Length: 262
Length: 376
Image (cartoon, rainbow over all chains, first blue to last red; front, side, top):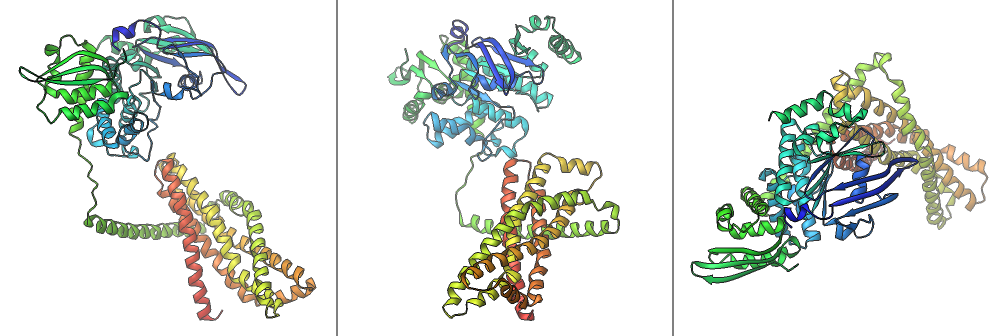
């Protein structure tokens, strides 16, 4: 599917009237969100605003208490249809969540063996291509996650998320724990992969630099719903305390300046 | 339009020609790989026609890049102008990745006799290093303990009593129940075997000797090895994973003094106390079986128990602090050796339990031999 095809038609993901409760607390109340095909959408929000819960709901780890999630026009039932859907979404967890008993190469090869039915040598060969695609040093392939640095773990985990050629990629705090150089490289990698693979990317982040460097649109999660979604400038202009503090605080201004003077 | 990917080879004017058709995607990867492999031994196709290509994903691009080779993938802009720009980008990105991946050193894990010898040597030297470390740690704990002994204000009675509650008080029900049950079983065995000789009443001696000398202290030690050594390893290991031990050191506090010594002291008190409980419960369990089987007065039974020399009781109790020290040291040391991952904490917890039970039984056998030789 080419990028021109991706740009048209239904959104990659459509969320309508989502309600989630944890215990007696309402986390999301009538949340609506569209993610367009081929875009990188950044989700921001204060601590405890339910960003991670939303991500877990979207990828089907939590059942929503009400509302619908459609992925490529298809209702995403968290418990049914896992096989069909699991192939089309890739998830990068905050700490990578690499399987600690497998090497980096084996981590990427596992879904290829289990779902695509490849033999082990073929899967590992393809896995090495994925690892190189995410910019991991080839020498790191045979190493175990405990022997990899934080940035290498993120890259290997991204390769695993890409292994089944997903159309939508979910990233939870992709640059958290990376140094600024590694984080900037990760932002560029994300844009490159999106362009090359025609991916739709949904990422949860606190990193203002990532928002400015990589995201096409930004969604703000506040007051139990998506308060605003649009380009950075549109969102930053919204007159809401948290939004103003976030985008027009010292760090927000620094990140904006950094983009304007590359 | 979903048509499985295909590679058609034909011979053209300037060498073999390849026509790419259908979906080159992961579901067809296996079949396409066979076709690409079959095409490879022949000369590289001279021209590649990509106009029939339908869907393409990363896996399919990896195969195409393999078929085309790096030079022709880079030249796609001129040789295949009909190919969409983003597909060309994908192919070029994957081809570049393939090039980098090819530089990866292949992990050769072939078995050779030399490796086995090397592994044995590594195992032995590792064992020696472990022993060395355990002895050094023991010395460190003893030195820390001795240096604080003179200063009662630094005894950390709060930590000791909290550990004592967890290791001793909380273990009372399980120790009592288990030793009572074992005492009853020993009593039953004695009644069955000795009963054949009409010597039922000697079961009293059997139960008394067994529990005073061996079972009381060994059962307690094994239970605490499972209960407390594992707890110590898990506590210290997770603290280490959370960098709490580094934080203590950075603040100029000694983890040995703050964490290890209180645990060792608590266990040194807990095991003898629980051993007394274990002996009492074992004798009760055995005694109950004897009383129910033989028509004997409880007072007579107590009299028979009273005839057993106190030296047997002391021989058993003397082992308790030794076992306690070994269990506590192994538990704490394994916790400190744990790495940063939860997996490592788990592995060291298992190791702590296995090691402490092993050493309890080995030391008990050594002590048994020693006591027999000395005649205690």
